[in-house]
Length: 420
Image (cartoon, rainbow, N blue to C red):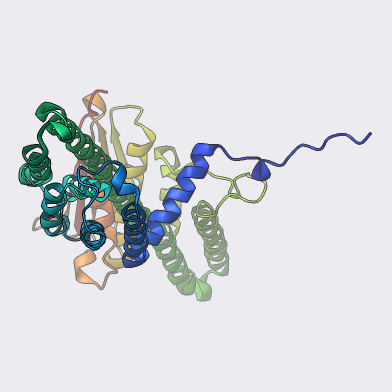
Protein backbone atom coordinates (compact mmCIF):
# COMPACT_ATOMS: atom_id res chain seq x y z
CA UNK A 1 0.00 0.00 0.00
CA UNK A 2 1.40 3.34 -1.03
CA UNK A 3 2.06 5.81 1.78
CA UNK A 4 -0.20 8.81 2.01
CA UNK A 5 1.53 11.88 0.64
CA UNK A 6 1.22 15.06 2.70
CA UNK A 7 -0.80 17.82 1.17
CA UNK A 8 1.33 20.87 0.31
CA UNK A 9 0.65 23.94 2.38
CA UNK A 10 -0.47 26.00 -0.60
CA UNK A 11 -3.08 23.32 -1.43
CA UNK A 12 -4.35 22.77 2.09
CA UNK A 13 -7.92 23.76 2.81
CA UNK A 14 -7.99 27.40 3.85
CA UNK A 15 -9.99 28.37 6.93
CA UNK A 16 -13.56 29.50 6.40
CA UNK A 17 -12.86 32.97 7.80
CA UNK A 18 -10.02 33.55 5.32
CA UNK A 19 -12.21 32.37 2.48
CA UNK A 20 -15.02 34.73 3.51
CA UNK A 21 -12.59 37.64 3.85
CA UNK A 22 -11.10 36.94 0.45
CA UNK A 23 -14.53 36.83 -1.19
CA UNK A 24 -15.52 39.99 0.69
CA UNK A 25 -12.43 41.83 -0.56
CA UNK A 26 -13.21 40.81 -4.12
CA UNK A 27 -16.81 41.97 -3.80
CA UNK A 28 -15.75 45.33 -2.35
CA UNK A 29 -13.14 45.76 -5.08
CA UNK A 30 -15.77 45.06 -7.74
CA UNK A 31 -18.14 47.49 -6.02
CA UNK A 32 -15.50 50.25 -6.09
CA UNK A 33 -14.86 49.68 -9.78
CA UNK A 34 -18.50 49.42 -10.90
CA UNK A 35 -20.84 50.79 -8.20
CA UNK A 36 -23.78 51.18 -10.59
CA UNK A 37 -23.67 47.51 -11.62
CA UNK A 38 -23.74 46.44 -7.99
CA UNK A 39 -26.60 48.83 -7.15
CA UNK A 40 -28.64 47.61 -10.11
CA UNK A 41 -28.23 43.98 -9.10
CA UNK A 42 -29.16 44.52 -5.45
CA UNK A 43 -32.07 46.79 -6.32
CA UNK A 44 -33.31 44.24 -8.84
CA UNK A 45 -33.17 41.57 -6.13
CA UNK A 46 -35.32 43.65 -3.76
CA UNK A 47 -37.75 44.59 -6.55
CA UNK A 48 -38.13 40.92 -7.44
CA UNK A 49 -38.82 40.04 -3.80
CA UNK A 50 -41.43 42.82 -3.57
CA UNK A 51 -43.18 41.64 -6.76
CA UNK A 52 -43.19 38.05 -5.51
CA UNK A 53 -44.91 39.24 -2.33
CA UNK A 54 -47.34 41.30 -4.45
CA UNK A 55 -48.32 38.21 -6.46
CA UNK A 56 -50.49 36.97 -3.59
CA UNK A 57 -48.54 36.45 -0.39
CA UNK A 58 -49.36 39.97 0.84
CA UNK A 59 -52.96 38.88 1.57
CA UNK A 60 -51.78 36.63 4.43
CA UNK A 61 -50.95 39.67 6.58
CA UNK A 62 -53.12 42.36 4.94
CA UNK A 63 -55.72 44.25 6.98
CA UNK A 64 -57.79 44.57 3.79
CA UNK A 65 -57.28 41.69 1.31
CA UNK A 66 -59.51 43.44 -1.26
CA UNK A 67 -56.97 46.13 -2.19
CA UNK A 68 -56.78 46.34 -6.02
CA UNK A 69 -53.89 44.38 -7.46
CA UNK A 70 -52.84 47.34 -9.59
CA UNK A 71 -52.38 49.47 -6.49
CA UNK A 72 -50.44 46.65 -4.82
CA UNK A 73 -48.05 46.42 -7.77
CA UNK A 74 -47.60 50.20 -7.86
CA UNK A 75 -46.91 50.34 -4.13
CA UNK A 76 -44.42 47.45 -4.40
CA UNK A 77 -42.46 49.26 -7.10
CA UNK A 78 -42.63 52.60 -5.29
CA UNK A 79 -41.21 51.04 -2.11
CA UNK A 80 -38.41 49.04 -3.80
CA UNK A 81 -37.15 50.95 -6.85
CA UNK A 82 -35.86 53.97 -4.81
CA UNK A 83 -33.30 51.61 -3.24
CA UNK A 84 -31.21 52.26 -6.34
CA UNK A 85 -30.20 55.58 -4.71
CA UNK A 86 -29.76 54.19 -1.21
CA UNK A 87 -26.01 54.99 -1.15
CA UNK A 88 -25.83 58.21 -3.13
CA UNK A 89 -29.02 59.91 -1.81
CA UNK A 90 -30.52 57.87 1.07
CA UNK A 91 -32.52 60.84 2.41
CA UNK A 92 -34.17 61.52 -0.94
CA UNK A 93 -34.92 57.83 -1.43
CA UNK A 94 -36.58 57.63 2.00
CA UNK A 95 -38.73 60.69 1.29
CA UNK A 96 -39.76 59.20 -2.08
CA UNK A 97 -40.99 56.03 -0.35
CA UNK A 98 -42.97 57.98 2.28
CA UNK A 99 -46.16 58.55 0.17
CA UNK A 100 -46.22 54.89 -0.87
CA UNK A 101 -45.72 53.78 2.77
CA UNK A 102 -48.58 56.03 3.93
CA UNK A 103 -50.90 54.72 1.19
CA UNK A 104 -49.85 51.16 2.04
CA UNK A 105 -50.79 51.74 5.69
CA UNK A 106 -54.08 53.52 4.91
CA UNK A 107 -55.23 50.96 2.32
CA UNK A 108 -54.53 48.03 4.67
CA UNK A 109 -52.35 46.17 2.15
CA UNK A 110 -49.53 45.94 4.73
CA UNK A 111 -46.96 45.04 2.07
CA UNK A 112 -43.69 43.60 3.32
CA UNK A 113 -41.88 45.94 0.91
CA UNK A 114 -42.45 48.70 3.47
CA UNK A 115 -39.70 47.09 5.56
CA UNK A 116 -37.20 48.23 2.91
CA UNK A 117 -37.37 51.65 4.53
CA UNK A 118 -35.23 50.19 7.32
CA UNK A 119 -32.47 49.61 4.75
CA UNK A 120 -32.59 53.31 3.86
CA UNK A 121 -32.36 54.21 7.56
CA UNK A 122 -29.30 51.96 7.79
CA UNK A 123 -27.60 53.86 4.96
CA UNK A 124 -28.45 57.22 6.53
CA UNK A 125 -26.75 56.09 9.76
CA UNK A 126 -23.85 54.73 7.72
CA UNK A 127 -23.17 57.70 5.45
CA UNK A 128 -24.72 60.90 6.80
CA UNK A 129 -24.39 62.94 10.01
CA UNK A 130 -26.27 61.31 12.86
CA UNK A 131 -28.52 64.33 13.32
CA UNK A 132 -30.40 63.18 10.18
CA UNK A 133 -31.65 60.10 12.04
CA UNK A 134 -34.31 61.98 14.01
CA UNK A 135 -36.53 62.86 11.08
CA UNK A 136 -35.74 59.48 9.43
CA UNK A 137 -37.18 57.71 12.49
CA UNK A 138 -40.32 59.86 12.26
CA UNK A 139 -40.73 59.06 8.56
CA UNK A 140 -40.57 55.30 9.24
CA UNK A 141 -42.88 55.38 12.29
CA UNK A 142 -45.54 57.60 10.64
CA UNK A 143 -47.07 54.75 8.52
CA UNK A 144 -47.30 52.56 11.62
CA UNK A 145 -49.22 55.30 13.42
CA UNK A 146 -51.59 55.55 10.42
CA UNK A 147 -52.19 51.79 10.49
CA UNK A 148 -53.00 51.79 14.24
CA UNK A 149 -55.24 54.83 13.90
CA UNK A 150 -57.23 53.39 10.99
CA UNK A 151 -57.56 49.72 11.92
CA UNK A 152 -57.41 49.89 15.70
CA UNK A 153 -57.36 46.61 17.58
CA UNK A 154 -57.33 44.53 14.40
CA UNK A 155 -53.82 45.84 13.71
CA UNK A 156 -52.61 45.11 17.23
CA UNK A 157 -52.15 47.30 20.29
CA UNK A 158 -50.57 50.74 19.99
CA UNK A 159 -47.62 49.84 22.19
CA UNK A 160 -46.98 46.64 20.33
CA UNK A 161 -47.00 48.18 16.85
CA UNK A 162 -45.08 51.39 17.59
CA UNK A 163 -42.63 49.69 19.97
CA UNK A 164 -41.87 46.95 17.45
CA UNK A 165 -41.23 49.53 14.75
CA UNK A 166 -38.98 51.62 17.01
CA UNK A 167 -37.02 48.50 17.90
CA UNK A 168 -36.56 47.66 14.21
CA UNK A 169 -35.38 51.19 13.44
CA UNK A 170 -32.97 51.02 16.40
CA UNK A 171 -31.45 47.75 15.17
CA UNK A 172 -30.99 49.14 11.63
CA UNK A 173 -29.45 52.31 13.04
CA UNK A 174 -27.13 50.40 15.38
CA UNK A 175 -25.88 48.19 12.54
CA UNK A 176 -25.20 51.26 10.41
CA UNK A 177 -23.29 53.03 13.19
CA UNK A 178 -21.27 49.88 13.93
CA UNK A 179 -20.27 49.40 10.31
CA UNK A 180 -19.47 53.11 10.03
CA UNK A 181 -17.29 53.04 13.13
CA UNK A 182 -15.38 50.01 11.89
CA UNK A 183 -14.92 51.59 8.46
CA UNK A 184 -13.65 54.87 9.94
CA UNK A 185 -11.28 52.97 12.22
CA UNK A 186 -9.95 50.93 9.29
CA UNK A 187 -9.44 54.07 7.20
CA UNK A 188 -7.61 55.70 10.11
CA UNK A 189 -5.31 52.68 10.41
CA UNK A 190 -4.66 52.69 6.66
CA UNK A 191 -3.94 56.42 6.70
CA UNK A 192 -1.56 55.94 9.61
CA UNK A 193 0.16 53.08 7.79
CA UNK A 194 0.58 55.28 4.70
CA UNK A 195 2.03 58.11 6.79
CA UNK A 196 4.39 55.72 8.56
CA UNK A 197 5.48 54.30 5.22
CA UNK A 198 6.09 57.81 3.90
CA UNK A 199 8.03 58.70 7.03
CA UNK A 200 10.06 55.50 6.72
CA UNK A 201 10.91 56.32 3.10
CA UNK A 202 11.91 59.85 4.09
CA UNK A 203 14.12 58.54 6.87
CA UNK A 204 15.66 56.10 4.42
CA UNK A 205 16.42 58.89 1.98
CA UNK A 206 17.89 61.04 4.74
CA UNK A 207 20.02 58.15 5.95
CA UNK A 208 21.19 57.49 2.40
CA UNK A 209 22.05 61.17 1.93
CA UNK A 210 23.96 61.20 5.24
CA UNK A 211 25.83 58.04 4.22
CA UNK A 212 26.71 59.53 0.85
CA UNK A 213 28.00 62.65 2.59
CA UNK A 214 30.05 60.52 5.01
CA UNK A 215 31.54 58.49 2.17
CA UNK A 216 32.33 61.64 0.18
CA UNK A 217 33.98 63.12 3.26
CA UNK A 218 36.09 60.02 3.83
CA UNK A 219 37.08 59.82 0.16
CA UNK A 220 38.05 63.48 0.21
CA UNK A 221 40.20 62.98 3.30
CA UNK A 222 41.89 59.88 1.92
CA UNK A 223 42.40 60.89 -1.70
CA UNK A 224 43.04 64.58 -1.07
CA UNK A 225 45.70 64.01 1.54
CA UNK A 226 47.53 61.24 -0.26
CA UNK A 227 47.49 63.05 -3.57
CA UNK A 228 48.91 66.13 -1.88
CA UNK A 229 51.69 64.00 -0.39
CA UNK A 230 52.35 62.39 -3.77
CA UNK A 231 52.45 65.80 -5.44
CA UNK A 232 54.97 67.05 -2.90
CA UNK A 233 57.12 63.97 -3.32
CA UNK A 234 56.97 64.23 -7.11
CA UNK A 235 58.00 67.88 -7.01
CA UNK A 236 60.89 67.07 -4.67
CA UNK A 237 61.96 64.12 -6.79
CA UNK A 238 61.98 66.27 -9.92
CA UNK A 239 64.37 68.77 -8.34
CA UNK A 240 66.53 65.98 -6.89
CA UNK A 241 66.73 63.98 -10.12
CA UNK A 242 69.49 66.08 -11.63
CA UNK A 243 71.63 66.48 -8.52
CA UNK A 244 70.96 63.40 -6.37
CA UNK A 245 69.56 60.32 -8.12
CA UNK A 246 69.44 58.51 -4.78
CA UNK A 247 67.07 61.14 -3.34
CA UNK A 248 64.94 60.88 -6.48
CA UNK A 249 64.76 57.12 -6.07
CA UNK A 250 63.72 57.57 -2.44
CA UNK A 251 61.00 59.99 -3.55
CA UNK A 252 59.71 57.46 -6.08
CA UNK A 253 59.65 54.75 -3.41
CA UNK A 254 57.72 57.08 -1.12
CA UNK A 255 55.28 57.85 -3.93
CA UNK A 256 54.72 54.15 -4.52
CA UNK A 257 54.20 53.48 -0.80
CA UNK A 258 51.78 56.38 -0.42
CA UNK A 259 49.86 55.31 -3.53
CA UNK A 260 49.46 51.77 -2.22
CA UNK A 261 48.24 53.06 1.13
CA UNK A 262 45.73 55.33 -0.60
CA UNK A 263 44.48 52.52 -2.81
CA UNK A 264 44.16 50.21 0.20
CA UNK A 265 42.17 52.73 2.21
CA UNK A 266 39.97 53.57 -0.78
CA UNK A 267 39.35 49.88 -1.48
CA UNK A 268 38.29 49.24 2.12
CA UNK A 269 35.99 52.26 1.99
CA UNK A 270 34.30 51.09 -1.21
CA UNK A 271 34.09 47.47 -0.06
CA UNK A 272 31.79 48.38 2.82
CA UNK A 273 29.21 49.42 0.23
CA UNK A 274 28.93 45.93 -1.16
CA UNK A 275 26.04 43.77 -0.16
CA UNK A 276 26.47 40.41 1.43
CA UNK A 277 27.34 37.67 -1.01
CA UNK A 278 25.22 34.64 -1.79
CA UNK A 279 26.66 32.74 1.17
CA UNK A 280 25.60 35.45 3.62
CA UNK A 281 29.17 36.44 4.49
CA UNK A 282 30.40 39.98 4.40
CA UNK A 283 32.28 40.63 1.17
CA UNK A 284 34.60 43.24 2.63
CA UNK A 285 37.25 42.58 5.20
CA UNK A 286 36.79 45.67 7.32
CA UNK A 287 39.77 47.49 8.78
CA UNK A 288 39.58 49.92 11.70
CA UNK A 289 39.44 53.64 11.05
CA UNK A 290 42.66 55.54 11.67
CA UNK A 291 43.26 56.83 15.18
CA UNK A 292 45.79 58.97 16.96
CA UNK A 293 48.13 55.97 17.19
CA UNK A 294 48.49 56.27 13.39
CA UNK A 295 49.47 59.93 13.62
CA UNK A 296 53.20 59.22 13.40
CA UNK A 297 52.72 57.39 10.11
CA UNK A 298 50.70 60.33 8.77
CA UNK A 299 53.39 62.82 9.80
CA UNK A 300 56.15 60.69 8.27
CA UNK A 301 54.38 60.82 4.93
CA UNK A 302 53.95 64.59 5.15
CA UNK A 303 57.61 65.07 6.07
CA UNK A 304 58.69 62.90 3.12
CA UNK A 305 56.60 65.18 0.91
CA UNK A 306 58.78 68.10 2.00
CA UNK A 307 56.80 69.72 4.82
CA UNK A 308 58.60 69.89 8.18
CA UNK A 309 56.14 69.26 11.02
CA UNK A 310 56.65 69.75 14.75
CA UNK A 311 54.31 68.32 17.36
CA UNK A 312 53.59 69.31 20.94
CA UNK A 313 51.39 67.10 23.11
CA UNK A 314 50.20 68.18 26.54
CA UNK A 315 48.54 65.76 28.93
CA UNK A 316 47.50 62.21 28.32
CA UNK A 317 44.10 60.65 27.85
CA UNK A 318 42.39 57.74 26.12
CA UNK A 319 39.75 59.08 23.74
CA UNK A 320 36.89 57.11 22.22
CA UNK A 321 37.43 55.96 18.64
CA UNK A 322 35.05 58.54 17.20
CA UNK A 323 36.83 61.45 18.84
CA UNK A 324 40.22 60.09 17.81
CA UNK A 325 39.05 59.85 14.21
CA UNK A 326 37.80 63.45 14.31
CA UNK A 327 41.12 64.78 15.64
CA UNK A 328 43.06 62.65 13.15
CA UNK A 329 41.00 63.84 10.17
CA UNK A 330 41.27 67.49 11.19
CA UNK A 331 45.07 67.19 11.42
CA UNK A 332 45.13 65.36 8.09
CA UNK A 333 43.01 67.99 6.34
CA UNK A 334 44.96 70.89 7.85
CA UNK A 335 48.30 69.43 6.71
CA UNK A 336 46.83 68.64 3.29
CA UNK A 337 45.83 72.28 2.87
CA UNK A 338 49.31 73.33 3.94
CA UNK A 339 50.87 71.06 1.33
CA UNK A 340 48.56 72.47 -1.32
CA UNK A 341 48.65 76.18 -0.56
CA UNK A 342 51.51 77.10 1.79
CA UNK A 343 54.23 77.16 -0.85
CA UNK A 344 57.90 76.22 -0.60
CA UNK A 345 59.77 76.72 2.63
CA UNK A 346 56.69 76.46 4.85
CA UNK A 347 56.64 74.61 8.15
CA UNK A 348 53.76 73.32 10.30
CA UNK A 349 53.24 72.97 14.01
CA UNK A 350 50.68 70.73 15.77
CA UNK A 351 49.72 71.56 19.34
CA UNK A 352 47.52 68.85 20.90
CA UNK A 353 46.23 69.29 24.44
CA UNK A 354 44.20 66.75 26.44
CA UNK A 355 41.99 68.46 28.99
CA UNK A 356 39.92 67.14 31.88
CA UNK A 357 36.77 65.15 31.27
CA UNK A 358 37.83 64.00 27.79
CA UNK A 359 37.98 67.49 26.29
CA UNK A 360 40.52 68.06 23.52
CA UNK A 361 42.11 71.21 22.11
CA UNK A 362 44.03 71.08 18.85
CA UNK A 363 45.80 73.87 16.99
CA UNK A 364 47.52 73.39 13.63
CA UNK A 365 49.49 76.33 12.27
CA UNK A 366 51.78 76.81 9.33
CA UNK A 367 54.16 79.54 8.13
CA UNK A 368 53.05 79.48 4.53
CA UNK A 369 51.90 82.27 2.29
CA UNK A 370 48.19 81.51 2.50
CA UNK A 371 45.47 78.93 3.04
CA UNK A 372 42.41 77.41 1.40
CA UNK A 373 40.97 80.84 0.68
CA UNK A 374 43.87 81.76 -1.56
CA UNK A 375 43.47 78.94 -4.07
CA UNK A 376 40.65 77.13 -5.84
CA UNK A 377 39.08 74.43 -3.68
CA UNK A 378 36.46 71.74 -4.08
CA UNK A 379 34.66 73.10 -1.02
CA UNK A 380 34.73 69.84 0.97
CA UNK A 381 37.71 70.27 3.27
CA UNK A 382 36.60 72.85 5.81
CA UNK A 383 32.90 71.82 5.70
CA UNK A 384 33.97 68.22 6.30
CA UNK A 385 36.03 69.24 9.35
CA UNK A 386 33.13 71.27 10.72
CA UNK A 387 30.70 68.38 10.21
CA UNK A 388 32.96 66.01 12.11
CA UNK A 389 33.39 68.57 14.89
CA UNK A 390 29.64 69.21 15.21
CA UNK A 391 29.02 65.50 15.88
CA UNK A 392 30.60 65.98 19.31
CA UNK A 393 29.35 69.50 19.98
CA UNK A 394 32.77 71.00 19.32
CA UNK A 395 33.94 74.17 17.60
CA UNK A 396 36.31 74.65 14.69
CA UNK A 397 38.03 77.87 13.67
CA UNK A 398 40.04 78.19 10.47
CA UNK A 399 41.63 81.32 9.00
CA UNK A 400 44.80 83.35 8.51
CA UNK A 401 47.06 83.88 11.50
CA UNK A 402 46.96 87.38 13.00
CA UNK A 403 49.58 89.78 11.72
CA UNK A 404 52.53 90.15 11.76
CA UNK A 405 52.60 86.34 11.66
CA UNK A 406 52.14 84.59 8.33
CA UNK A 407 50.35 81.40 7.47
CA UNK A 408 47.15 79.61 8.35
CA UNK A 409 45.65 78.45 11.63
CA UNK A 410 43.13 75.71 12.37
CA UNK A 411 41.83 75.39 15.94
CA UNK A 412 39.62 72.53 17.13
CA UNK A 413 38.00 72.17 20.52
CA UNK A 414 35.96 69.17 21.61
CA UNK A 415 34.13 69.64 24.93
CA UNK A 416 33.89 67.16 27.73
CA UNK A 417 32.03 63.94 27.04
CA UNK A 418 28.44 64.09 28.22
CA UNK A 419 27.61 61.54 30.96
CA UNK A 420 25.59 58.54 29.84
